[in-house]
Image 1 (tube, rainbow, N blue to C red):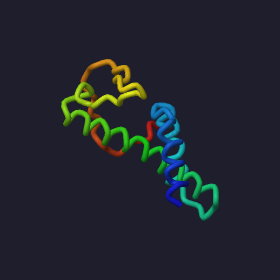
Image 2: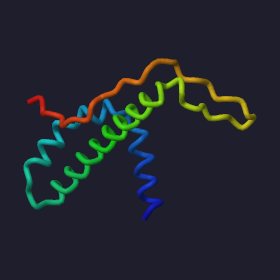
Image 3: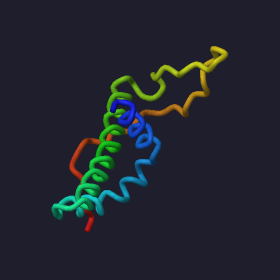
Length: 104
């Protein structure tokens, strides 16, 4: 079970949040319109996955900001012991956790 959940998490983390958030209004609407069907259950799970990715990124950004920004992250070392190429420097943006409103 843990292996399955770990694989799901890896696949979800590989998806671009911006692309997922474009689907947020659709799945928020489908989830809000309850019907005792498999389609509703799947829509509710998709909505939760979108929310999970968004929440994870907000939490990540908050922790990075508390650490003093992206420059404070320890860079992983490659096989030869040399540090991996650094990301561009700059402060992480903190996005407050709030409920998203359907733009329609």
